[in-house]
Image (cartoon, rainbow, N blue to C red):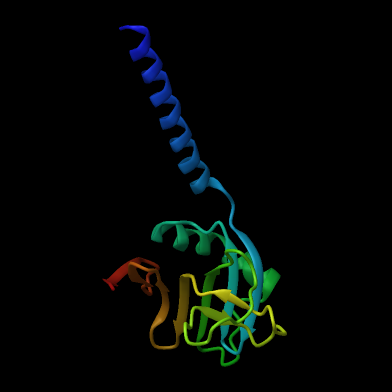
Length: 157
């Protein structure tokens, strides 16, 4: 192997290591809850570094549910029968409402304008109903917890 081929091999190996390291870091960084907003039976949790996979999102919730209930009183159910928790990507923070015709921002009524909105980037939501039980909704599918505790993928959307 000549010098040029060795050099190219080292460069390629270095680039691959950087890419793998970045992806490893993406999967291992902790989730940060930035803020929580409540509106009746609906809670909005603004997060950074949320898991990327459906399994990761559901497992994160199951592992952190009690902590979130203790620190943020979520889920908060006024009717004690149903609740919804929506996880939003906090992205670049709170923003002004912007152009209403685009409908690309979600605004919180419990924050004073002008910076009371975030870009609409829903990551995950959980709903619980008296008749339906707990459902986890991701971009790819809906999952339900059966009475025996088994997690079942219901369908893809």
